[in-house]
Image 1 (tube, rainbow, N blue to C red):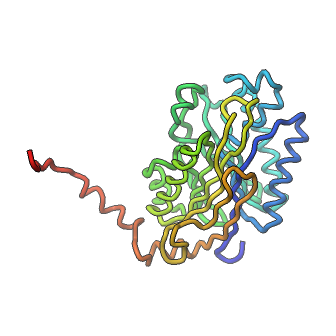
Image 2: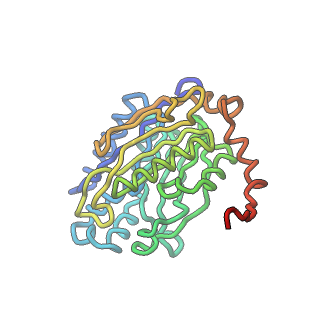
Image 3: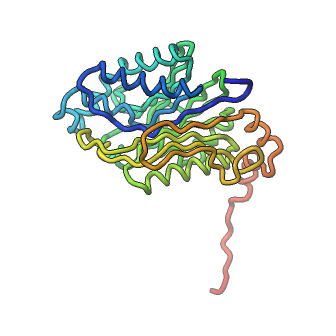
Length: 298
C-alpha cells in the first residue's frame, strides 16, 4: 500500500480436485504468490471457494450432501492455517473462500479474513438463499463485523447478503469504505443479481465494492457443480470514479485475478463533496416513505 491507495485482487476461482493436502497447499501458494507479485495488498476469494476441500475425502463423500459439508468443515482449521501463513509470508490481507462450518449446533457459511501481522477473524453470511435453507440446512451466523485494517475499514457481504441494502447500510454507518462480496452463482442470472447488488451498494454507500466469483464446472462436488461469474471492482459513479462505476472487471468464466487500484481518499472525498451525497441523504428516506392512498380514475 502506498499512501492512502491500495491494489485489490479479486478472484474468478475454479475449484480443483486434489489427490492430497500438498496439492491444495501448492494451489493456494500459487494464487497468493501471483497476486502479491502484481503488487496486490488485498486478495479476495469467492463464496464456497473452500468446497474443493471435499475432494480430499474421496468421490463418494464429495458427491453427498451432508458428507461434503462435514468433510469441508473438518478441514477448515487446516486451510485457515495455510492462508494465515501465506498472508504473513507475502505481506497481504486475504479474504479466504467461504466454507460451511459447524458452529454451536448449526452450520453457517463462513469467510475467514487474514492480516499480514498474523491477525485473523471471520464473517458469517447473514441471509441464506433458498438452496442453503431448504437443501443444505445452512443458517445465518454471527453478526456483521467491521474489520479495521491498515488499508482502511472493510466489511464483507457474502453473495446474497449484497442484495439487501440495510446490511450494507449498517456497515457504511459503522465506517466501512470497502465492502468485499465473495459470491457463488450457478447461472448467469445469479451472477447478475449479485453484480447489480454490488453496484447498488457502491452507489448508496459511496464506497467501493469488490466481487469475487467461483467459475467453471466441478460435477464431482455437491452443490458447486456449475459456476458462473468473474471478478469485478465497483465504485460510486461520481467524481474520482469511472462514469459507469466499473473500476475493473474480468472476463466471464475465465479463471484468474482481476486487479484494481483503490484510492481511499477518493472514497472519503466523494462522501463529503460528491456531485450527489447518497450516503448522507439516506437519512431523508424514513420521513418520506409513509404512503397515502390516492384515488385516480376510479
